[in-house]
Amino acid sequence: MASELDFSPPEVPEPTFLENLLRYGLFLGAIFQLICVLAIIVPIPKSHEAQVPSRGL
Image (cartoon, rainbow, N blue to C red):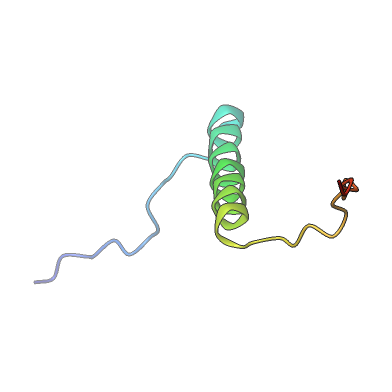
């Protein structure tokens, strides 16, 4: 039990440019999808509806 334990952090390589691009692209895609789903769920009132005058006969 006299062996030394190695508690140094593991050597993890830095992410490359393409890995970072993929990561942030996936985050942006997920945010865009959430916005699209919220746009379907949350109704937005249409305040600028064009009312066509009807002619009474």
